[in-house]
Length: 465
Image (tube, rainbow, N blue to C red; front, side, top):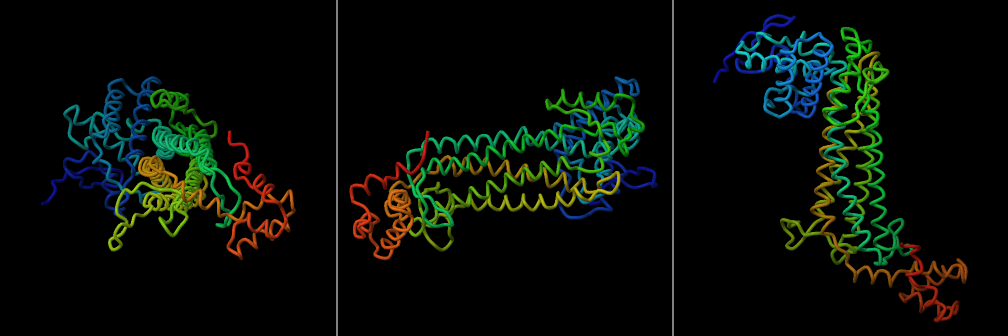
């Protein structure tokens, strides 16, 4: 089937656009010139741009450079976009101009054409709203696009990632409290070490994630500084006085986040260090999650030939050939997510360093990778909690057996008999395959009564309150 087309015009000339499409000439050129891959501009970024368009219209009207009718049309069209009504009208590839100009114009054109439909005018007529003169008034892609990335990132972190991370932290805190009296053998270098409680072991994971939460939340402070009003290079050319302060105040009230106008817009428009920093905090969360799930799958390995100290929920069969096998699939899925987030961090680090003079030309990939990372980490925290952490249980018999057979309990004897004799007891017990108690008595280094009094795991785990 052939698609009916209409003819639109821009500064380059005429171009055919699908008859019923709400986008216009610049969007169509981008579709033709950048048919690269399958990655589309994230809708969360589109919604953030639409929020900026709505606020810009209200501020421009307040500053008496846009009439009320045009303001209302822009606000109404922007609201429809943020409600997801026109998602199919944003088809552009991420792999486009490094400034994101075509995406900014995509939004401008769609708002213009929504207004045309509302008022009975032809699509592409730029009547009653012109994409540049009205929708893009007092703005440039160069300040809108980075502001939109920061807004979308902050919204997704505050509304999705941090609340889910908090749920995971609380689930681990509950396990730590419930397991506070389960004494087990510790391990360093993957070898037996002195005892601790299972609750203490889990508390390390809780603290890691709590610190990650704080880092991510603190990193948002940089993202609340918006470059809007800087227009093309940061000077504010073609933006009225106080536009920058009023639009950030408008957005802050609307989105309920503490956005303010950046004092130095040149910095935020020419570089995106705040986004690079936020991505680095997301990477650190991935680092913590990877360590935690690797610990869990080590402690759960078995069920008969491994450590087997933890029992994980049996969510699905683990093998197509070995009957009854169950694998730590949540650990594996989350580990892959963590590696992907680390890779995204590398890409954003390089992208952040890729600015030249007044322009960073890696904006779309920064937006794609940071928003993908937030979404992946949010899903991982939720899946990990619901499908593994909440149902995870200790294998008390195995924990007790390993504790009783550990040679490293001998460490408690060191203050009484010295390191050398304690070491000799451990080595003798290991070679003779006997208990530490028997080894100590055979070597005549300590009485059985003193051994029983000193070598007590309950006395080795510190203050557990």
